[in-house]
Length: 107
Image 1 (cartoon, rainbow, N blue to C red):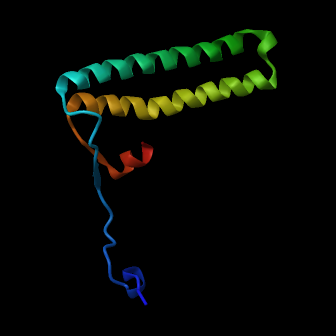
Image 2 (cartoon, rainbow, N blue to C red):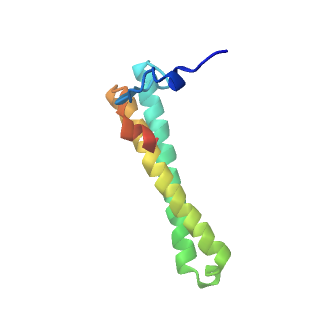
Image 3 (cartoon, rainbow, N blue to C red):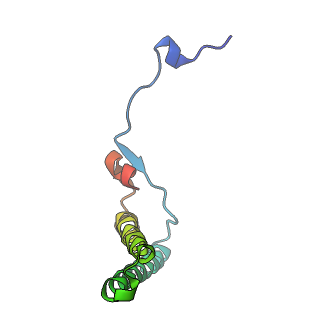
């Protein structure tokens, strides 16, 4: 019979304070290219979702539940993209591979 170390009361209960991100590549030139690609994708995402929200808001025939729900989805997409992509871009440029435990929860 195998007993777990958790049941015995022994084990490692430490909490990590930082996490190491290995990233996509270690090549500085490729990191700059990836930064530009992520920047362009982020800007297109923001412009597209803001455009959807504005068109729905200013067109009275789009004031139906389906389009209101679509504008909420566009807003949610802006929030998710704004939480993840800028953090990824910072890590690509600064060469800082560590993020805090609370920063890891956001990712």
